[in-house]
Length: 471
Image (tube, rainbow, N blue to C red; front, side, top):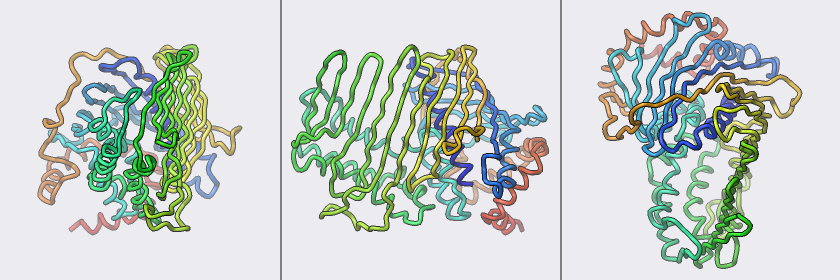
């Protein structure tokens, strides 16, 4: 299952990068009709695994996902209509309407009858943690596929910066008093905030040493203090030959953060010197527009530091060297959409926290709105793609205002806040609509898919728990 998670995660990363480039240039509301088909090639897997994976492949290859989507970054509102359509019988489709803000979402569907449920994206990780505890299903990894899940957890870092520091320019100074205040606020929110605690415990639960992640997150709150070395931090801004550069330096002259802007490119680099913490993050991100095409690269690491000194935690030699190491390079993304473009690149993820993978990326977009992406294993570059997404994303006009209010999104049934009474009430209300809505869809599923799913449900103990709940 971890291997299936790996290529799905890689595919979504690629699709997300393409969709991000599609959305650029429209600061208000962007809306699209979309349609995607998938192909999972089981021949790329070891022979002993193919029979089990074939069931999931048959399911993915059967389905088309289609609908409309719209998002307004300014109001942080979004909505999506989604249909899962079996290619063998379009009338057996299941559908849903999802809408709301990054803080609260509502879900309507014929499967729910007249009921409307809501959920907080920040609560998904807590739910995923409980699924792992009960069944050892890697639900936390699936949750990472949901947009904004990680951002909602870690946004306390930029939010606190904006609150205490605000915009910076040449000559901005962070004195020791402000640095300590900033570090104290980060520590409180990183260690006490529900969203970040849910993220840390959910991702950490499947690990053999979950306390490693807890230590690494706590280290984030102390980095700015240690990097400053008891002195102030200074911003300097310079412009030369059309490039505007902003740097954050400590008293020793070490550059901790650097941004470079031109009319056609942007780059930023975080580079923290060796300080007495267990794990130190670093990254370099670059994007450049050439002839109407965007080339981007990302190198990000969260690796073990010196781990010595009074500020260090209980450093252990058996802890992993790398928590996370991500490499992404994409060339040929369309700067404006729709347009003809050929996409190529690589994506890899290694380290202790998440399923590891390394793929070669190929794809294209067309002026008619077609989108195609494929992933080929990096160790067999001449082989057939492991996973392919083909479809279309066609711009459409959005009428009206896309501005939901978080406080108005709450319903009686908050999925992650149900007690026994509300759960019983919801089950009673939706049992008939679910049965009526799913029976035709389930009838279209291949026998191999049912077998693979049932095998996993049995292996993870889900079936046994369900049987225990039946009187």
